[in-house]
Image (cartoon, rainbow, N blue to C red; front, side, top):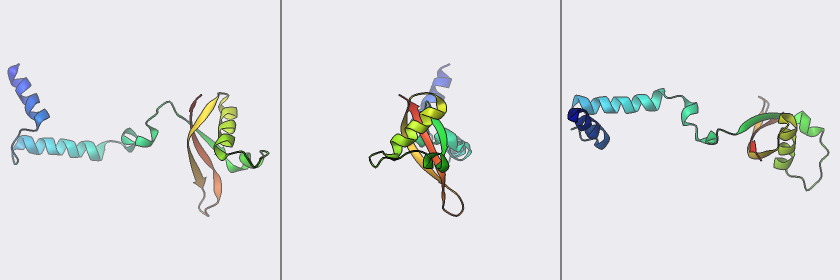
Length: 113
């Protein structure tokens, strides 16, 4: 049992000498974690997993009556709330363009109010 704790202590404190097989193994494990872990696991943009993604086409926004004081975030929040039937607050907005650089719509990431 003491031997296991010694090994764990050496791994945590990285006390293996350079060039030993243990050092090489730890380096390979770290590199494997970096390169083999899916991007979605390490994606910091979606740190809040309670966020809801709603896609709102630009054509839907074109139908809305716009006042000059209405902000895009408020308009998208209203539209997203209508689609999901929940009160939502916009956390992030990503425009979606087609191949000709024309606006197709918005990906709106919302959290419950």
